[in-house]
Amino acid sequence: MDRLQSAFGKIPIYCFLAECVGVALFAFFGGGCSANSVNSGLPTAALGNGFCLGILIYATAGISGGHLNPAVSTAFLMTNRLGKQRYLLYITAQLLGAVLGAFLLRIALPPEFLSTPFTTSGSLTTAFPTQVFLLEFICSFLLVYTVFACAVDKHGSAMNAAPLAIGLSCAAGIFAEGPYTGGSMNPARMIGAAVVFWDFTHMILYVVSSIAGGACAGVVYNSLYLEDQPAEPEDRDEEEELFEPSK
Image (cartoon, rainbow, N blue to C red; front, side, top):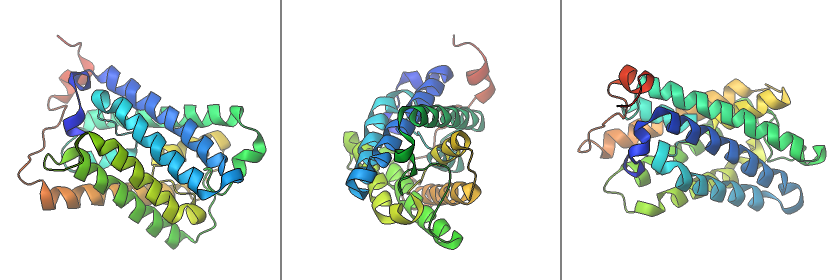
């Protein structure tokens, strides 16, 4: 996020690797927590994913800003806090990481653990399309709104606890929608699992709803509270920064 990023954020390959590895670990450990819900239920899926996300944001925030989610990156793009070239870099890294994490999870866990209600083995859902859209939209809105309030807004009170707050917002979303949709809120994880399990049922619905919810949250928060904090895109000179060696 804006104010958590260090000088490493100026070097594109470091950002790419941070986002790719971060999402891969989130897909693996978050998916593992969801798979374990076959034994311990929804709290394991929700809290496991929430704390895992918080830990990985702590680990990557100083390098890439710790987006780890196309919905977050899209919100940053929509509010001019991320340039177009770097946005494409982040999205590519997140998708590759999600596929890698889902693949590792598939070969590491027994098949019976990959079909629990809270495991995103593809895009299967017990909810109707309208319900899926609304649940994913609202929960993604909460997640990205928390990102802007805690990690972008310089007047926010979370400070170094921002990753924990973001992780807890993810957990809250899974508690709210997990039994009905699986609780995705992350298009990369959804696409990665869909590719690995070769199940694209309702995938577009999940992707569009979470992207739309995240983008709306970013635009709303930015319009209401960040007028006195002008955006400073990391890649103002996109072509030079991303495709020429650092001097």
